[in-house]
Length: 487
Ligand code: NAD
Image 1 (cartoon, helix red, strand yellow):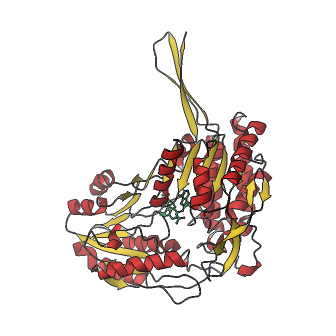
Image 2 (cartoon, rainbow, N blue to C red):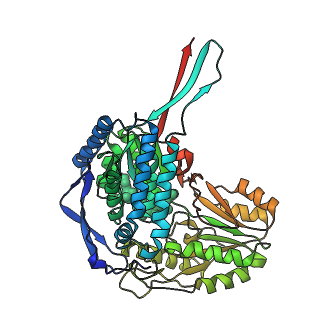
Image 3 (cartoon, rainbow, N blue to C red):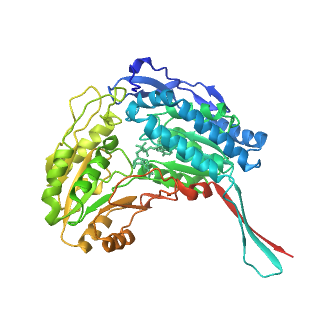
């Protein structure tokens, strides 16, 4: 069944959600549909005083409802009902998301929305299973590590997977007994607003989930700096993550989780299953047109396997598609904005000028909206801009290596360390490399996240600090206290 729709038929409600109410503001930030370049709505921008209102509403809701002090199983139950409502409203959420994002509507119910519901359930189930510990001390005393909710969590999300990014933040925050004030990306806020309303419909007390709309420098910065926020949880670029860390240093330190950018390598050895490797690499860079933090955009291939991989990839990636996200079965992913399209092309042209050979693509597609041709660039120059910069588009680079040491050196020569992929049939080599690759996640003979939400995700080096998903994300929404009692 298709959820295809006419883009103008979707009513969009650009109002904040504060204390369970929709709150209007002066609409001044254009939300543009990437599929056709048309302005779909204008958003208000929450200033410091409106952010303050949202943070106060969150504290008041926590106090009134006793959410953090109640039976943990009550939180679990309410969150399960919320996940059920997310599934029941899949068609509505899918259209709200697809109309202004890069996500094709027919991919959403079985993809991002199913994952959003699963992630809410995953965290809900931790509420009555994670707890403190009694620790070894001398017999005459009792030592315990106890934990409690932090209070109000300030979260900021990017545009590339709006619903599941919101679930990464809301799920652990609520399950762990906190309230949340979340600022979604100003480019893709509508599905997140509806997700917050569904939380209230599911019985999660109004005011525990607040959504403030606006840009980074005004709304995001005010949220980060607010003294009533107990922890900041951010997903986005390394540049904005650094601005947030600087903001916290200037306005008062708080715990923070930063999920940032990447430039992840995929290393292909000569003994790899060539068909599997090529398909996996092509899928990983074509999915969402490479607009994924985990995009495996740096392919590093054994010199003697390079020609074959090159040929396979140019065939698999020769499928430029201009198709709007609201079309039937569409898998033509647009680029999120005209600005981002120009940035991608600027980097590709700079790479070409610096000596990279263009094996495929290399320019924007003719379209009303923003679409870029899948592109492959070959270069062994480690300083080429396409090797160094996160491009966040459907652009692969190909580098070659002679032996394992060289492969590891090339893979690790990046300021980022989010993920890495590895293709080989040699088990010992696979194990050696999983230890030596500098990345928070390593995939072997596959590439991309699975639905195993128990696996935490987090970056090394400039790719981040702390984790989303897994028990780690839940625990990062609690704070611990050491207790020692003399008996
Ligand atoms: P972005 O950093 O431009 O924006 C992300 C969010 O931060 C937006 O809501 C934005 O309004 C806000 N923001 C911007 N500047 C801010 C500031 N100074 N203070 C507070 N908030 C601010 O990123 P984007 O373009 O929306 O998303 C793409 C980036 O996100 C890529 O770099 C990608 O790798 C990264 N990302 C990382 C992960 C991960 O798990 N590591 C997941 C998804 C996306």
